Length: 33
Image (cartoon, rainbow, N blue to C red; front, side, top):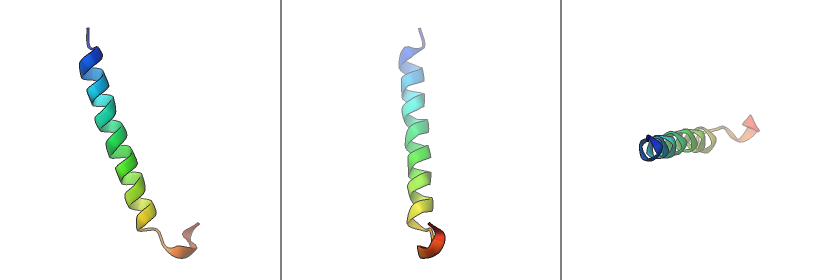
């Protein structure tokens, strides 16, 4: 019954998670790794 809404919500959550992860990695300092 809630397949469409849950799939959209999961896509938004995954997008926000990966975008924030990429944001942290892109602004990480060279010696952070």
